[in-house]
Amino acid sequence: MELDRIQRSMFDAVRQPLTAGEGMRQRTRDGKSLRSIANEIIKPNDRLTSFERLEIYNRQYWFRILAALSDDFPGLRAIVGERRFEKLATAYLLDCPSGSFTMRNLGSRLEAWLREHPEHIAKLESIALDMVRLEWAEIEAFDEAAKPKLTEADLPGLGPDPKFELQPYVRLLDLRYPVDDLLISVRREQEVADIVSNAVTERIRSRARRRRLPKPEPVFLAVHRADNSVYFKRIDREAYTVLCALRDGKSLSDAVDAVDWSGRGPEEASAHVQQWFAYWSAQGWFCKTT
Amino acid sequence: MPANRFNGFTQYGVGIGLRIPHYRHILEKKPVVDWFEIISENSMIDGGRPLAVLDQILEQYRVVQHGVSMYFGSVEPLNREHLKRLKALVRRTKTPWLSDHLCWGSVDGSYSHDLLPMPYTFEAAAKTAQKIREARDFLEVPVVVENVSSYAEFHASEMTEWQFLTEVVERADCGILLDVNNIYVSSRNHSFDPFEYVNSVPHDRVAQIHIAGHSKFEKYILDTHDHPVIDPVWNLYARAIELTGPTATLLEWDDRIPSFDEVHDEALKANRYVAERVGA
Image (cartoon, rainbow over all chains, first blue to last red):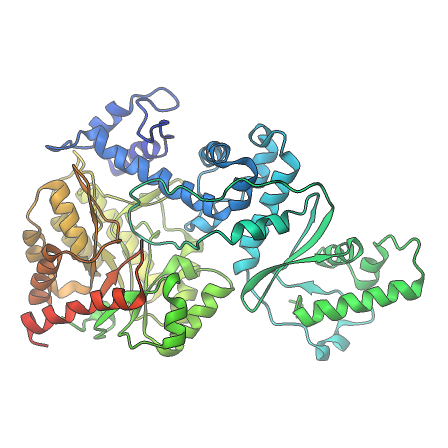
């Protein structure tokens, strides 16, 4: 049998979802016999059938990617509960298998997928989607590039109505629930995992316990990095609007004009903007323009 | 063969894998360690703590890159984005050689994140060797391939695993990362003599050796890297260095990771075998 055919057959088998008992299914999702596939490509030995040998890889595949996704989304786990998370994670990974050499990107399509499959987060849709957005933003903020910071000396070169570029690691979120506080409390109980080359002996059971969910409360958040740690910084709605406009390439005057300043005088607005920019600059959120 | 063209003519001694639970100990205590092996994929990123820690390690230690997802044995072409990021990391670490596994793990751009075993065929050897050559040409650093632990054998195989390894490295003209724990694990799973394996590989191509622990189950052994090295694996290591000379050796301990000192002490046992067998 040719290499290409062997790899396609084995890969398809390895990615079949496990049974409730964490064994290999008898048939693929499209009805092919996995015993026949195993017998066709894999030799039995004196201890294991072809099916049992293939099953080792089937189990490893799921144990590894479910553990990785579970590590990346402990907040979602805490919201929906372990059993429901495992079901949605399996369904998601069947629809969106890893397309990257690193498991870091496993959850990159989870928010979009959940929007298409809201049945997996029924009755918790808003808070669950908020949490997924926050957890993905945290992953990106953790290891996105840091460009050279914009300094005071760079300001004259930006012109009379400058455009400010945000650091790639700064993520802006408008949330309907205070999931930042929830995630911080969940994270305290989580261990850090790494990519390594060893085999996995068992499904790693996560420890994120379900907890009381917060009431709705609009939160505007900048997820950023300082001294190589990720922080969640709550900001005003108006500051969020300005930052989003700058991120999207608007000039400073257009960004400030995007805010609804009704009820505030020009002096008060100006004071706010100055205060925000002083903080954002001190944090190094702006980078030299490319 | 301690220093050869496959390991950049280096003599690196005994190292351990750089793992998160040991970061603080290493950065604060600065223990004397011959070298660290990093998993390339953990540092193929654009910024943040992993790169900051790596840069601090690089200031004081020698680092060698070990990859887990190049998949030289997959039929599909090498991932160009992967190669570009890997090359950037090679420039950062100045690794004298770079290793990845003799395995496959992706189809049509989907990744298993596992080290799937090769069918030992001449077709597979030729395709794999071609990809190793392409990677080496792009990365401009010696590339060595590691034998993996396996739990399955294919009807299609036309030769033994060690014959396949030899066929691949000679076609690719590359080095070997000889993992003696993987040889032991596979020998138990497939009932072959592990010493025949060690005796048969081209010793002049061995650039590095891996040692590790594993887990025994009723009907098979898994390569879990979560235990000390057992005596039969040390015996294979002793035989390997008799044949290769004292070679850069690395202990892998990836799960249930004990203290830094415990891991390092386990790795340094290798020096006893070097002294006994080759009198270094």
